Image (cartoon, rainbow, N blue to C red; front, side, top):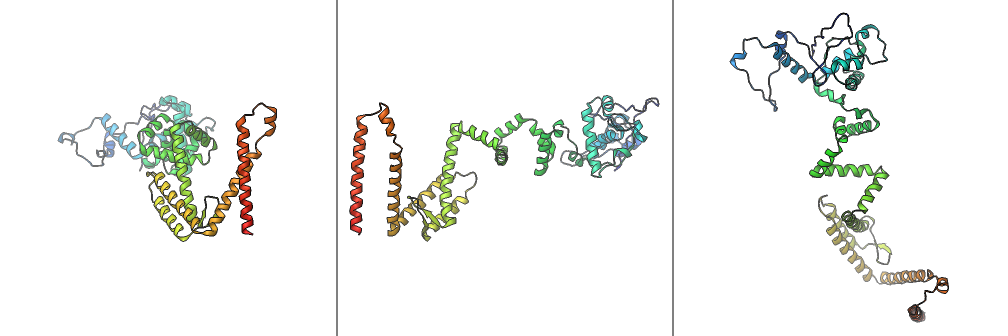
Length: 394
């Protein structure tokens, strides 16, 4: 589509003057001939896209007020092209500082001068300039050098505009560029992500009020923590300092450990006995573990797994104990292992007693000696029992 813009009148003695712009995005359109504009006025439409006839019989066959015609024409232009209509004005009239004023560029003005005439900031002008520049690199619009002030060209459709334009200064920062890149990776417009990032209070309100937003935020935080050790530490510290969260984490960790116990039996086909032995799992036990695991895997994310995990763990653990008792050789080995474990613990504890401190410091109490004498008697009894067992077995 070709969008016609009549260049604003300027004095021959002032070639760099550009008409002041009063629209929200610094655009004041030129007044077209009433006959031409009337042909461009779009049909009125409601929000659902249904057209309604809102003209009376008096509207037909009479001349319209030129101001109304101009407004309707300008509305049609913007409805079809959106920000491209404004960007064209910048692209054909602005020559940023530092660029040579040669050829057609002699009549162009700086972004600062254009902004002053438009009554807006140079930064806003340059955002439109950069949007046009990116679109020109993609071959969507002509390069600045071939555009002449007042020239009309075919403009892209309005819905393409937001792919190139951002109204936020933060988009040019390192942080803004990272946010924009992440937004594009997620398939959304960078402007949406930048708007959220610039208004954390609004984000907090949405998370507090809406479960869906809270779930999205939770997922994003978990993904972020995988690559952000500092955030991991901060979250862990925050949880550790909050009693309710600390209890919830402990409960979930316990459930995860129990599910892991069952899953290990299913996947590896082996069991770990109470004494710490690792042996082959009986077929019956493995089948029961598989049944419980399938029930756990079918739970929705919203369902509590703690109770189901506890039932699975208790059932499988009971079957493990039964498997040990039903196998004579395994039962003997289990008891032998338990005895060794206990003996090692007792030996380690006794070796850690610092007898030198007893002699150097006044820490002696009568019951200490009584406990050691009782321990000595128990050790003697144990030694005698083991000797008898050795003699009997030989």
